[in-house]
Length: 312
Image 1: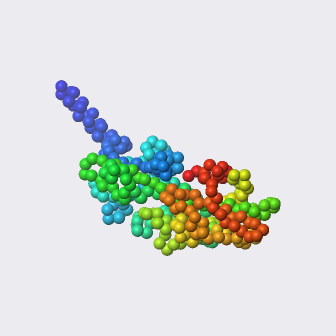
Image 2: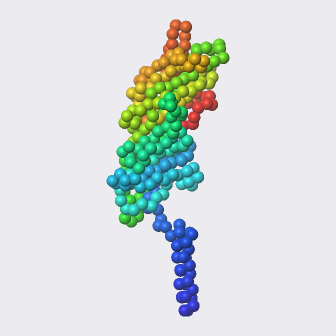
Image 3: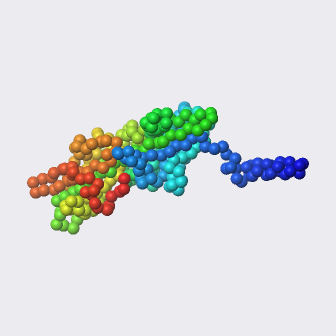
């Protein structure tokens, strides 16, 4: 009997020793925060796995003090569409961004009042490339809220577990420009340049930068066919545009670089529905012998069948 008792003690000490050495993960307490991720489309269908392949979760305490950032990669998301945390009891504020890759840079995340997300590289001409296909979550749905999204506030209990769902939405717009009638019989296609694009967004609420800093972006065009008509087309992915964004669309000569025609985007935006899930803005610029016309095509995703776009 004594021998059995001694063996039990030695076995317990062996387990504790294992906790204190290499494999101390077995000794950590179970997570007490489970944050799920969701990206519903306009009809309520879940699309997260199709569109988001990485998430950064910034954690701040009730006083706005930065606690940590957790990066959740594709492998982790394939195992669990969310993140599990261990936090002391208290109130926390979570900020979640999806798909921040090569073209995106976080700034001053330790201070939420001035933290931003911007283009990773802007050259001396204040010209940026394409934005990443970014998504943002500023709301959480819980059982207590009846599944309705509220502010991203997490109250960790002394005992038990908190669980909620971060609701993501697009942080970018896709702008498509189609040029028709310019040098149709020649071998050159015009370029498209955008001026006045937002240089970034505030990290905590996806609002435009307070100083309204703007950048430009340019792109050559490709010949595409839509509904039997040929266009020289260019696509841009930019930080989310506001209806009053001072963006101008310039059609430029590929030879001289000079502007052939320009139009304020505000004229286009007036005719667009700025619903939360409206992320594609189309405009057609057509050159005619009598002048230039600008129109909004009545196309949907099924009509636009060419393969040089992005999957939203």
